[in-house]
Length: 125
Ligand SMILES: [Cu+2]
Image (tube, rainbow, N blue to C red; front, side, top):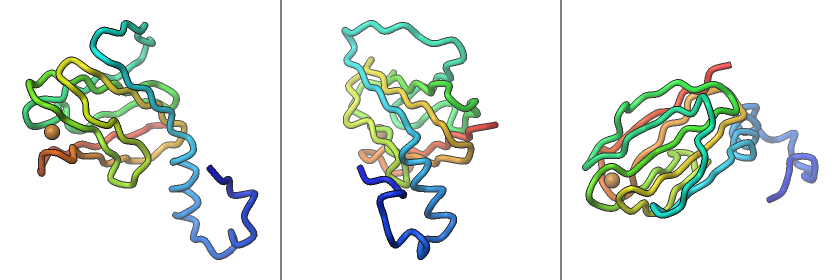
């Protein structure tokens, strides 16, 4: 991935684009199959993925703390940022997907299998 500093045309980009790019670079993603066991960091915020909605659909999380989505439904779902910052791929039942955010802001996301499965992560300072 190319960084801002490598570009010669950055002066043309809007500040919102800079913010979006910084946010995109700041997202850390992990995903896991059901059989794998990982420790859960203190402060992790959990979102349940159901058939077919996210609950809670809006969550607040501090910077650097993980958000973990777990498929608690019976069919495949995905967790995909509306802006392309992150994407889980297909989550089978019991599988989870985790993202940490370095930048404050609101990050709307959706399931790309089921129209109307929507949620928002709000990253607080
Ligand atoms: Cu879905």
